[in-house]
Image: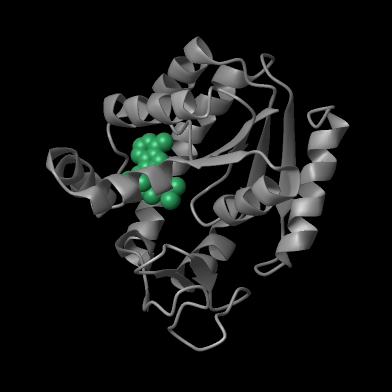
Length: 216
Ligand code: AMP
């Protein structure tokens, strides 16, 4: 199964993809995680990516396409759920040239839910585990359950950066969706509550995927 999950920043696509990864035993590829890893590693590439990442701007297609291609090679282009990519029509075209997707699930979430969720999102400085003060709280406030690391708010999750990210997301995602229309099986899942339990959301996503025979 080669599946893309599309949704605005903060729609929960990363969290749901991780859960799908463990339920179905397939790879979860997040280009956001690839960027964070590249920044952590340091060096020339790190500086190039950091400049965009910290402002909530998209990393140029040529860097992100290269990172994705290398990651796909590592997993032998096998089954995966791809989250955070493609974000531009150029990325969609690039992906189309190297892989045949089975389907796309799009999460449809209102701006107000997104802003509420992202202001509450916290990440572990040490292991990258993601928490949310609304629906995915750590046992002890500010401390990671997995490794005891300190939790922080991503630079690009601050409300003033989020609003700008959302506007740009809408414009670009329309172009990406137009590119895929009539090409690839498509399902839309409307998210109407801020904090639905993760299991429930993943059940709904998988039901949608099943409806299009994507799980066989
Ligand atoms: P995410 O964790 O998916 O919200 O991504 C965090 C940041 O990583 C984005 O704001 C971009 O700076 C960068 N990024 C992740 N995926 C992409 C992509 N497909 N294209 C360009 N930049 C990306």
